[in-house]
Image 1 (spheres, rainbow, N blue to C red):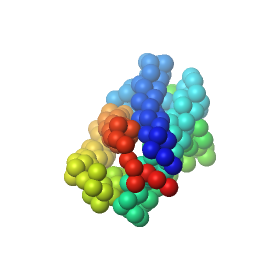
Image 2 (tube, one colour; image 1 turned 180 degrees about the vertical axis):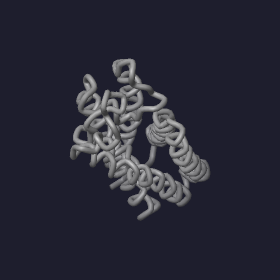
Image 3 (spheres, rainbow, N blue to C red; image 1 turned 90 degrees about the horizontal axis):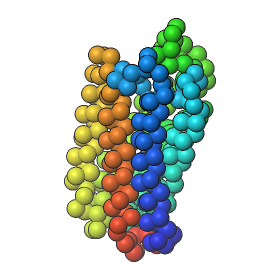
Image 4 (cartoon, rainbow, N blue to C red; image 1 turned 45 degrees about the horizontal axis):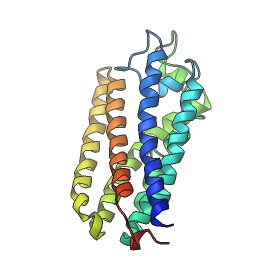
Length: 224
């Protein structure tokens, strides 16, 4: 893997985060009057029932695939000087909610939206897709937070990345706070707001990592 390829996949990873966020912001405009971005989750927008739900799920799935490839073909080569930490951190990012979690979106579709008449949380889990969404989301979030801390440790062991190791660790703490805030938001019927703040912040963090790689010129660490 040469430097140009590493940077190319960094741009792919950055673009994926932009498309991911824009896709569900745009999708919010065709959800109808009963859907609320404040109280309803992002996954409700690509449920089985809403218009163009499958299209949104496919877009999100492609963004997940791009994030997995970014982790494997850009993050790992850039930090491989840190050894096992780089491999573990990249793997965690790949299987996190932004990687594997999004890749599974086309098959992890809940049966209906809470905004739909007669739809309850138990109804959403009545299908395989709904169950898959339920069992993959929370672990995917924890895997992402783990990736942030492991990659921060890898950065601390890589001279050209040492300057961002501390900020990356602090960002990991921010994600923990946001996760707690999301749980609190769910208790006050603000699930949609909580999940969106977390999702945007996470996408911004990945974009920052991708931007750093794309704008740098790694040499020894990017050679396979």
